[in-house]
Length: 219
Image (cartoon, rainbow, N blue to C red; front, side, top):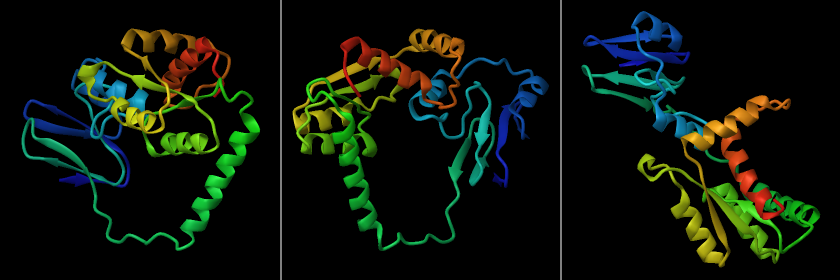
């Protein structure tokens, strides 16, 4: 069992567990090829982070700050969040904050959406985009909803959740498929741009933006 105040990386080799604060050091010392962990890459593009306990390199694991690694022999390793010793209750003014937030969202939609018939929402099926969709419908909009769709074998699609939202409100939905070749193509475009791209979900956003632009939709 191992935890620390800084993020660490690990790899299993020759029946032993090796730890370092630098992933590249592990690849060099242990002679691990720098092959891409495709499932973790898709998770990074989708959620902005690699899968828990993994990195974008196959064979290299990650122990984030606040997590513990449990190793019980080769092939039996897990990375888990540490349980907090105490958790503060939410501020009792949260209801006021929520009401204020919704009011601001409504104000922003009404001020920025010019064409009610050509309006779209990037809908993942999560809380944020689902709330925005519900507010838009309440205001009289009928937005087209755009949802990312990854290859089925990766098991990372949120389409089922997004579809429940569009079905609930009777809204049109378009699934935008992104595979590894498409992501690679978009990445090349982003890297050649003179504008900085610091957001980890730039590729996902770019894929959605392409589809929206092709349809002549306002977001």
